Amino acid sequence: MKKFVTIIILVLIAVTFVGALYYLYQKNQQDPVVYKTEQPTEETIVKKTVATGKIVPKEEVLIKPNISGIIDEIFIEAGDRVKEGDLIAKIRVIPNVSSLQSAKDAVATAKINLDNEKKIYNRQKELFNKGVISANDFDNAETTYKRAEQNYRSAQQNYEIVKTGTTSGIGAAANTLIRSTVTGMVLDVPVKTGNQVIESNNFNDGTTIATLADVNKMIFEGKVDESEVGKIKEGLPLEITVGAIENKSFDAVLDYIAPKGVEENGAIQFEIKGTLDKADTTFIRAGLSANASIILDKAENVLAIKEALLQFDEQTKEPYVEVMTGDQQFKRQDIKLGVSDGINVEVRDGIDKNAKIKVWNQLKPAPVVTQN
Image (cartoon, rainbow, N blue to C red; front, side, top):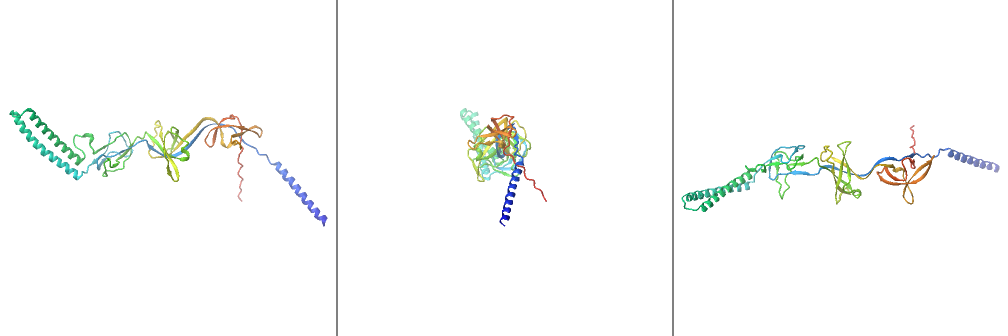
């Protein structure tokens, strides 16, 4: 019995030993890891951050009336181009009853005074012709009479202005005729014929009749997050892309960064503005949404490698790559880096364009899944 047990144990040991040898043999038969290599390329690397916003005119002019009334006629519509002085609208005045009555009374008073001065003038003229009074007395009477005539005419004109908003003799200064104050395009006409409008004064902004702007002077207006605002400064170039205009970008210059941020959805946002290049004549409609790529740094036609090829020293944290020296043989090569866009990085020193760099973190192919 003991002999039988001993034999069984020996057999198990033998089987285990043979299995271990077979495992080691199979492992040695596997192919060694073969590292691929990549060479540096010549790239233009742009480091940038993106801001979202819209395209708006640099200056918008709101045309407001300087007299209250009813829109009698509108001579423009959105999209029209106008010049300074062009007629935009005509207003029909609805007079204030109290002001109208006061003006009417002023006319009556001026007429009474004129009639009285006319009688005095005629009497003084007869006396002067008879040599009873001096020329000086006659001149005084004549001056007073002419002044009364002028006061009467002024009272009549004031009455007409209160009643209709205009009067004869004031030409282009008529309050009822609303004219453009700038040359540009009509962006919006928020009123219609028959609408009541209020004059612009120190106590009221007044009713906007039209919005005008020079569409050849457009700017990008957007916002950047507080995490990015420290990276930008005035004068940086922008690349503007407009969603409604495909396959085209517009050059601009960042010329304004808000000194104070505004909280939106739990994040602090800073307003920025950039003036578009005037040389580009492409028509961009005001209010179109756009994205601005703010160029933080740029390196043109430089030696570059993919960031995935980089390795970093555990102690110094300095970058290096492994360069091929023979068949699957590599050596460490320290390098100096420049501008990076997150995919490619500029190499300023350490390797040349002929270097073959080890792809040390190559991905294993995904396993093939077969369906039954």
